[in-house]
Amino acid sequence: MARLPRLSLPGYPHHVIQRGNNRQSIFSSAADYRFLLDLLRQHARQCQVAVHAYVLMGNHFHLLLTPQEGEGLPRMMQAVGRSYVQYFNRQHQRSGTLWEGRYRSTVLQTERYLLQCMAYIDLNPVRAGMVAGPQDYAWSSFAHNTGQRADPLVSPHPLYWELGNTPFAREAAYQSLVQAGVEGSAQQALTDATLRGWALGEADFVVDLQKRTGRRVSKSKAGRPSLVRPEIPS
Image (tube, one colour):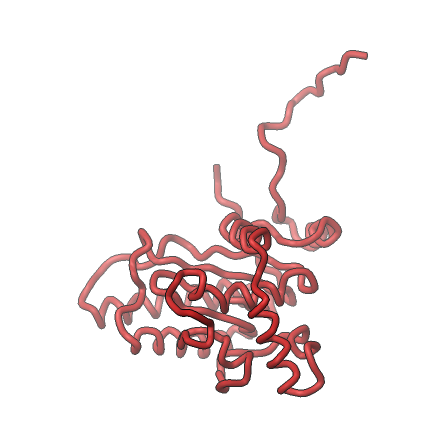
């Protein structure tokens, strides 16, 4: 069965996961993390993609972003992926692929999932047992979104601005949101939708989204449709 094209719609938040091939490490030094962040900043700006949250893990990374045009996200990810592999192979004297195929992504219903996805991303190192709290991890957007440092990669989403009338109020509200955690069902929904490429949101959102694209946005019922509808006994 042919793969569905990626679902990429301007003006909607997207959750993106890119994994290393066979779950191998995609970073070997602090310089590698910094180089990928530089690439993300450069190509997000060039492709008109706003990055709201990110985390760089040992063998994969997550992004939460909003493209301003339909091809902005795939162009950005293609440029970042190609440039980083060239750098990594040259830097570490290796050859061949680094990524586990193409990146995975989903479109999110903003009001329902955007802030949860931000917290889900920033809590990744905690769930992995790498740190006690998100503030202890250097390679994520948590420090920016809680006012600990300015990160030129991050462009706050309007829903983040609604968390408070002042920077301090927004940062405190977001920190409280992260400390509260993300329910297991929401974590699973975010992971599954992203890996499978289906839109994530309430039924009305998915129906409306389907009207905006010719690409199927949700999973259809299992099995092949019948050519002839069978009669139902009375």
